[in-house]
Image (cartoon, rainbow, N blue to C red; front, side, top):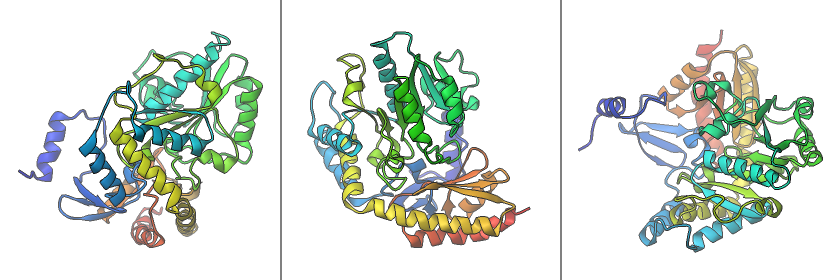
Length: 400
């Protein structure tokens, strides 16, 4: 029996832990870059499940692969081999230029694995070499270790005592990082492009200098590409944009187009730290998730997705910069790369998000005052124009 939206809202209130500030719509299905609510209203989706639905909704090849794999085998223990997992690992190894791959279930789990292997690797030479440095305004997950790695106190409040060994520096401040590093530094963990913290792009040369400091102190460089990877920046890995190779890189979100999966990829040297029993997962890298990941990886590599991200991303950024010029008292900056873009506001953005939603456009506000645009990578210029029609209607209402 189909329930009304109000009945669903009430069920959620009664039964679900109230950790999400939900919007008052019930989504029913999606098609391409659009989603539809239970009343049939159509929305253009510039959130993409928070950078997850890289191929949009109901992408035919992805749907077919998931259905076919579900009909064969959804899950088996990682005590056994599957071809789909071996194929997905090979693809990520080749794309990254690193050495070994591990699959988990989420971005937080991927980052947990990266933290574990970094600590274990350092322990092989010096048990006291345990410091991990991350950036202020970073976001690395919501488990106890990854929220400790996250350089935002609001996520940590009330969850202490937190794990020891984490320190924080301002993003883009190489001097602050140099002062904090020593021979006891195990790793530096950064998002090449900060997403949740407000879409912050590194200054020219910053990541290369970070790499040099890591080499100086024999510390690992971990890049968290949970949000900025999978082609979102315009290259498959965002680190390719800056000509800097990490020792460890993490992926999740878009890796299987919406099926839960996460991954950390390490050099062969770092891989020496882990042996049977040092890490594991029940569900991670199961056949269903890997079948979906293979479709996403093949599509990005062979269907000109990166070219589209660069072309359409530049068009979207140009359009957003036009709004900045038009409304300088409201919009101070547009930043980002590819289809990971942020619009810095002079006021909180939640009301603008609400107004866009009412007019059929799903966007997002992060860091309180940054409108974030992370649409499916199949976006077209015509889809950009659709969003601009909504923004042209909404933004003038919030100009001081």
